[in-house]
Length: 108
Length: 122
Image 1 (tube, each protein chain N blue to C red):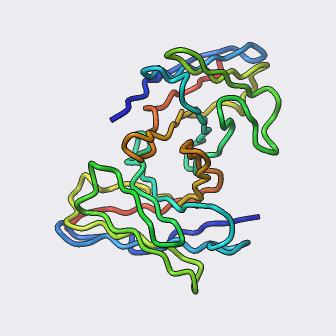
Image 2 (image 1 turned 45 degrees about the vertical axis):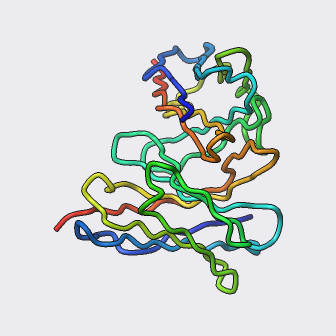
């Protein structure tokens, strides 16, 4: 089945830019979706179709996808952005949802 | 605003069947081109997609769980359900239900339930 690889952790200072990557074989040919999960809470969709933001998600959240890597970018990081972030694709060859292992974003 | 709520036993004995129900409010489960999915998360670990159902009854399951999973829908009650048989301690997790937006085979999950912890233990 399709595999998504994320770094376990990313650290960033407040006000700086955080970039969280999601690697997969030719992932640029798929649509990548991103979720934010804070402790004890359900995941929240923050980016869909590579770069679209749901209503209510700040413009500081953006996404890109090309080649073998998709990237979630969080600009002007705030303490409240500290969370686990998961990328997700749909593997149409096996008709199943696939999640990356998750990245813990720490705001220093 | 669509809301989803999981319900079911929080403790299941090994080898028995885990049964959960997700109740959808704020809209009809039959309206729109939505699938309805189950996703789980063991403590301290990542998310695992379990399977999904369309209101027609059509299902897709994670191949690693397929032999043990059944997802069903009751449109009259605006609910869909998960059954996972022959459970072991490895099935202990928080179980989420979610609305699955399925367009051109690029599904994503836009609304999630709060999750329910199911522990497998004797």
